[in-house]
Length: 161
Image 1 (cartoon, rainbow, N blue to C red):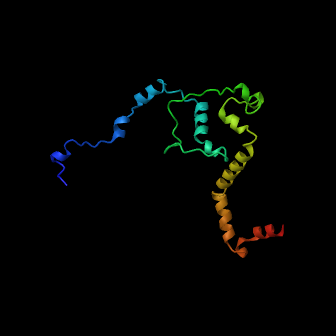
Image 2 (cartoon, helix red, strand yellow):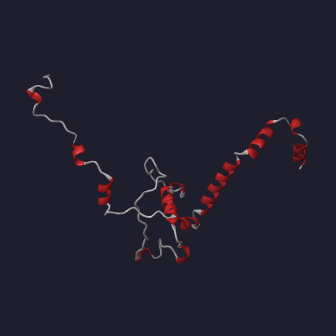
Image 3 (cartoon, rainbow, N blue to C red):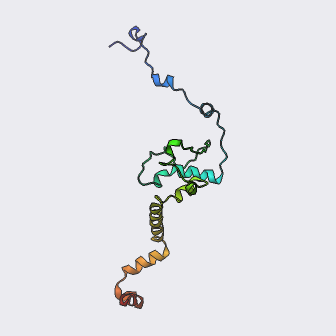
């Protein structure tokens, strides 16, 4: 093989084509592509809605969503909230009745009859896990480890019931 500095390699240039086609995108360039959207005002309701969208995988056990990158808890600076308008063909199939409509996404999800048992069960599991730790639970576990003769009269009263 000839040496790399020889005239045999003079006309060959090796480049990575993807570096030319995708230049470095800055914040201002990305903002220009999004029709110059300005950073939105982060109200408490908007923050709650964005958190619900970011954690939507925990709301419905039947649906699976891909992860939102490395930082799912990081809320976006620019966002827009809109209203979904149903077409005439969806009048009987998938529209919400006036009584089912709520003012924001969080209230609408909490009022859903299909998801209510799942949310209630998961909340109970979290409460049980929280109660399983703590001073009272530690005393209960440590008392169970003691022999019956050392526990005293309290344990004897429980057994008689």
